[in-house]
Length: 141
Length: 72
Image (cartoon, rainbow over all chains, first blue to last red; front, side, top):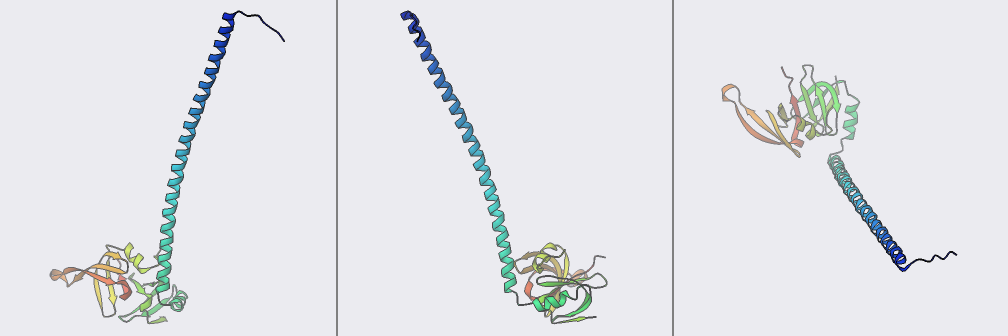
């Protein structure tokens, strides 16, 4: 152990220096802590806002998709059972067919069979959308 | 190419001249709107100078067929 003899003035000066050093250290630490807290809060706020936006967009998109799917399902469920007629017509796609409805009989190439109607095209380019529920007879020509 | 449902396909063709066959007759006009299962056309009645147009709302399930004539 080394014992140094110092004067009272020198001891007071040393104590002062020690005190100011401690004060500086505390204020620097406080500053760093404050800056870190502000930065972290800012990052958290931005992340929360972005996440909320993504969640809202996803929720809206999913809700719309589900609603549309439900509407289409309900519509299909409410339609009379046309699967036999639709299957029969699907086998005649690209053939010349004759379809009769209560109003008139149509002839032409069967272009497409959709959920509730079929597309028939005549040789002159006239296109008919025939309601599946209104088809009475089908014949291939 | 074609929409799954007639209602959606007709919506795509708003502004197009059509002939619509119902069980008891044929109506002619231009598609103006499609709302749910209702189709509205601006019906053309008569020929030449005497032609008049009136809005006509048609129930889509009541349609026998819809005819689109080729553009000449």
